[in-house]
Amino acid sequence: MSPSILAPSETEQHQQISSQLLHWIEQFQEATSQGKCADYIPALRDMNSQQLGVTVIGTDGTMITAGDCEAPFTLQSISKVLSLIAVCMEYGIPHVLQRVDAEPTGDAFNSIIRLEMSKPGRPYNPMINAGAITVSSMLAGDSVTQKMNSLNNLFVQLIGTAPVLNEEVYESEWHTAHRNRALAYYLKDIGFLDGDVEGALEVYLKQCALEVTTKDTALIGLILALDGYHPIRQEQVIPKDVARFTKSLMLTCGMYNASGKFAAFVGVPTKSGVSGGILTAVPPRYRSRDLPFSDGCGIGIFSPAIDDVGNSVAGSLLLKEMAQQWDLSIF
Ligand code: DON
Image (cartoon, rainbow, N blue to C red; front, top):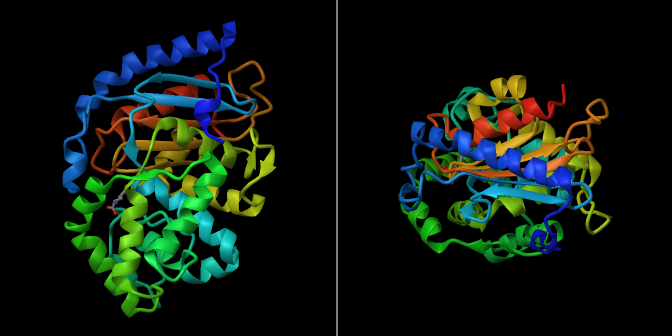
């Protein structure tokens, strides 16, 4: 079921929320100049850094959008959420935990240091590159195509379609992925990468180059917010334990080494990617009945100018404002 079939609501309250979102977009758009597009992946460098868009989807399927909500962007690290869900659904959480831990690092997302400092070198969590490459190598299937198919099957369950691979971004990163290649070969050496190293790297970089819009990420956020229940299909598409495990990792590790402050001052399970995407799952809040989306919602944000840590500058400010004004924090 594609979010595009959801009609934007026309009620007065939704029009107020829509105007509010538009106002915030205008307010935070100038903050895009404080960041810059990721330049270590050449194909991302040339994105229009001034874009800022948002989609919010509520439990009844109401979708409210503003700004560049339909601009396509590659998932990058947001894909780590999906590959984690896929392997947990395939093998169960205990098996996945034997291969990748669930502890924050406080290090940069592409850091290599802890793999050697801790024995036996199990990656700390699936939201950093080391852990995500291990997870990609575990995806069901014996070939890159089969592994991508198993990931795409999950997307079909969630958003009704398999995202298109942005070949230019994939090729661009494949040729410059020296750090990720080093991580992958090191993981192989210490026994935390299944199968062929270059194949695992190919799967990892392809999942990062899958293209979506904020409507897709908002819908995925909504399903996670509801513990894996798809309110439009009216079906449990992710087991509850897997959805909760994933959200806990998004909260503790999803914003790289800014995750602690993000949890403290925004307070909702969120995952970002270096192309400027942000996926947020807002669970129901029973003490905020008079505020928008108190039944829970999914939020998708896109704004490609990122800070030094790797998070979207304007996107983070927008999400923080939404969280404060709508009392979204889970704490
Ligand atoms: O592997 C990379 O560096 C990118 N494809 C994704 C990085 C990203 O979005 C931040 N990672 N946590």
